Image (cartoon, rainbow, N blue to C red; front, side, top):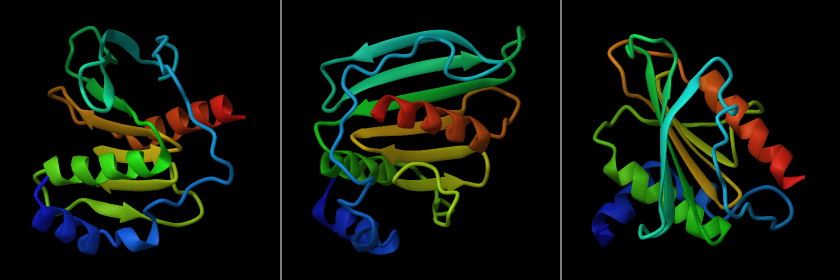
Length: 159
């Protein structure tokens, strides 16, 4: 990411309010894997771990119906630290071509920091992981509840 684009993202999404801040403690999740049961009522269609990517990425596709009309793409980036995860959040925000993405705040926020595009895309960081959930099929699916459930699963791993 170019320096000017990074400065824009830092200002636009008020990174000074969240960058480097997360849950108490410095626990990390290592060797994250999808088992297929993380998204209730959805079937893991395919998953690929890209160790060559920096940070390593787990790219998955989830199917809700046999027709394939309802599909979700869930990418998980496994970063070395909380700050590296927040750098990845900014990188991912820079790759999203929409000015409608907003930071989510409040007591029911998902992850340590969360961004969304309506209810159709969620990007969040929890500890050293960054999760991007988005629609990938013909039928638009609400993803906030799925993001919340996945975040709860990550919280249990951190306990």
